[in-house]
Amino acid sequence: MTPPKASTQDDMALLRQEYEESARFISGITGGRPQTCIILGSGLGDLADSIEGAVAIPYAEIPHFAQSTAAGHKGNLIYGRLGGCETLAMQGRFHYYEGYAMREVTRPVRVMKALGIKNLLVSNAAGGINNTFKIGDLMIIRDHINMMPNPLVGPNDETLGARFPDMTRAYDRDFIRLAEEIAAERGISLKKGVYVGLTGPSYETPAEYSFYGRAGADAVGMSTVPEVITARHAGLRVFGMSVITNEGYHFADDFVNDAADVLRAAGEASAKMSALFAELIRRIGED
Ligand code: HPA
Image (cartoon, rainbow, N blue to C red; front, side):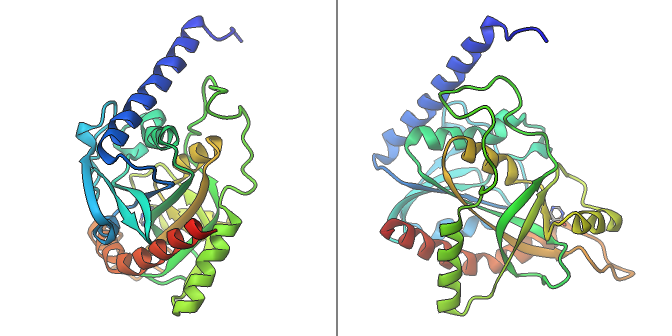
């Protein structure tokens, strides 16, 4: 194994500089000190409508940010108040299946860290593997299985995080408890389970859904895990939620997976998830 080239240090310094520049640009517009960032998954961008005094910053204007090309992803960073707290919401994320390098998929998390964000709330549309899950259900992600390339592969910048970050509690247990309390008080039914992150973009075959179910997954999707690994590397506290948009456990003769159905199901569950996130942010702020 050859030792890392000197240029690696320069690359890391350059990247850090880019994160700082993006963060400076954003804080120059927002002026505030938000503690929480939400990443909104496919079809879940409507949560941004609940943000008071919203200021939208198109990704295209943020230095060094990539563009969001996926269906159901708008490509704006929204700043305002949610649950009474200053919040940033990413209306659209970058997926590995779009062809972005993992560095670009996870760049926004680095920028959030540079901005002083402490908590990351991630959401996604996911296929249900657990046969007790129905379309429209909300699932708290209690753990994940990573089947994508790990975003931390490559030289490690020790100023950003440890070489071998712990993943035993990737999803913050206090946040999970708070979310369960809120749901119980409001009569919102919540599932809890393991999310497996795959590259996509093809949906799974019935054999694959069944395979990941046997491996311990309850839901499957094409996002979230790279951002969560990066957030934990950066020391952010993480809460994750999947909206179950299709049922990957019974396949009637005429059934096919269709992205339009996925977006519709996510849109329909989005109000329920938004209310839960707003209250979660309020309680995290009070903690
Ligand atoms: N598989 C992968 N990703 C998904 C699915 C699915 O069934 N549904 C929504 N995102």
